[in-house]
Image: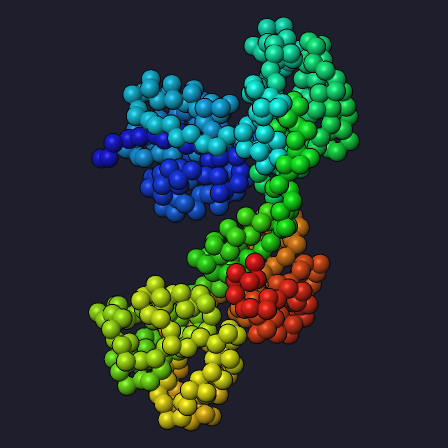
Length: 495
């Protein structure tokens, strides 16, 4: 039995990019993940094989009591499991990590602390508010807003906070905002002291309200500010006017649905999130091996008979390479064959394999590759086209008409994945700004998933983005109006 261990891990403030490398590595090897509420549940994708147990707490709703959480950690550790206790922000800053560590010590259970990026620091930064600044503040205090400021035996020294600290950061304090303001004013804090309340900090939904100590309560009530939010009080709040950066991102607050395969959607989501978007991944296609490997195996056995081998996608390269290696062959099998590709990403996939394509047209579509090959005098040349099981016939038919002998070999196929229609409805009900289609299959399969409801009805008011003209044509045939299509038909250009 492996030695039991519990890691008290900070998940960061919300933005998934702020998860530490150590936290990511631990999630990847964990047996059990005991986690709190996460603004991005996708963080759990780093723990694909772990048992995942939700113990989150929100205002007025506790899944488990703290004592029950403690007992759960003890139980899983004593089963010999490697446990990640994933907590929002930093486990030792108002995260009860210290209490949980004490319980583990009492039970003689080994543990480690993995600090996280605290919302106390990250949220003001994302609002353009530095907590210290040589011209404004040389001291900062972090205070829990859970404690009733009016209680007689308060652990908070309000007199010193009001006049002895330059910047005050209250966590979980929105519900007691009037009492916090009252205490600070009572003990000498200036009514004109700048105040910022940042809700959903570091996320695309971030909302920042700025006022003064004497009017912030009324402003917050008027704007309907609710938890989760952080309160920042001090002269540094004035700097937000010039340092605000996150809320100025080009896609800030936009809700985008990505329909690519699960394995390929992540990188696109990260690029869009870096621009301020909230991304939902809802794969409408899955890439699987071909129905029958026999045609591909035969082609691989006769590779030296071909003049050209054509790849139209990254998936084509990956699946061709995988099968080649399964047959105990390597890149040398393609030594005498010229290579043609569609798209920069396809070319890069080949370069990772040590192959530099002989031909890549500037326009990334089948018609352009066909024309480029015709200019290479392809008459009586033998061509291997490695592609999806179902695809347009324009490339092979054009080459055949030019006198080439073309073998169309399926190296993979796209299928409809198990789709959670309820999840899609939930995403749409919360509001969606943009949906991204990266192939005709993604459009057709989404239509199949929502059938019998017409896709055009479901996506009414949603901006349609397509990677290129073929995908756009498929969308138009289903009644959709395409608003976004890049001049270069790549994911990079689409983003």
